[in-house]
Image 1: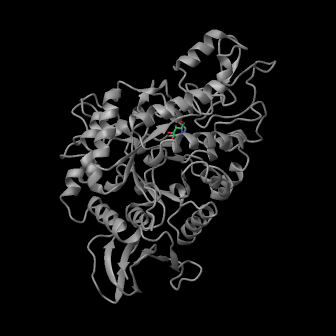
Image 2: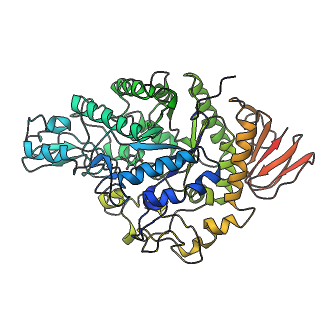
Image 3: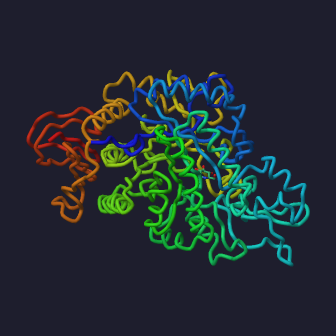
Length: 535
Ligand code: NOJ
């Protein structure tokens, strides 16, 4: 049997470089800091790391405002440090996925600076979306930035430029050949340096149509597009169907070209994962057709309630939709843009769900710190740096809570993350979440993750199919148990607030709530927990 490409069932650990580990005492994580902790990552049992951006950037949006995509920002180190990180990871058999940000540049990028100087109608401006103001001086249309405020900013000569995000992130014009060429150069640059793949930021946004048309409810649309904005799923879905600037047909042409570049690296099995939050959900599968990208993020679980019927539906849907293009789904419970899962749905619930989805077919993305059970950081408004906080005048709290640095050791904040002052404060209450503390506790979440990842690798990967045993529609327990069988393992999650006994043959290998019972015919599944049973 031919083995699967490495990424198909990979567990990928997302590192937010600024918050991982600080090697030089300046209060911010950096590339040498990551390199020095790769053993920890490898011992977790993951297959790859995905690094959020570390490129030259004024850092107005956590590095997603790139001023030079082929260089490293001094706050993170140097190109030499990037090479060192990649080669150390490879020695440990960890693949490296870099982030690429093709929807926009930073306003500090030399192209944008040249566009400002060159003036209306110039080839320099044609690389971005510059348009004249309306006769009354208002912006060309009423779109609202995903970070709040208008999507257009006026420059000195009266023209406006489009920015779906911060005003420091001018959108690129993908009708322009220079843009295509430059990104192809960037892809090859990092591939030649050794990276194994890319996470493509705002992958569905590159191609714009009708940039001069108005939207009927731009404010609600902008809210619906933010993962940290609570909204009824029905309302959100309705609004998402009306996004005028995402998911245009033209993006697929770009990825077909990129795929040829990836494939030209032959047996290195280069992969790319799209950040493409599109509606209706079937549209996501277009990004993973055989001649396009390899994976597309599935954001359902970042906002899903801990509810059996809801989870059953979104999990099933993802598996089924992906199967129509012969792809496997991806799963993520947290990332740098959303509240941490432990804070969002609760501690026990987040553990149960993490181990439930780790057993599903496809790739799992784990946001660094999730393996420790970290909640969101407790921040005062004074600490916040997210542009959405700044642009909304504090109305939107933003994403800083999920980006607080990791606690490594000791009893006192900043828990070994830095010898300086951390860029965001680590709460003193995180004493029991440090790597050091959890290492020493055999039943810590960290050690449970290690066990689960090892069992997953040994026993689950031989099959890419699951068979539901209990679902809310045919479950006997009022819809509070979800269970499926994959390969030789039965996975059972009890979503209710009371422990339950279930009768499945076999031995309990693993339980999200801690110590396991071995080999009893009736298995006790504690409240809000997940167990894995070997058949
Ligand atoms: C998605 C990234 O994950 C987010 O952090 C960033 O702010 C936006 N794209 C804009 O690049």
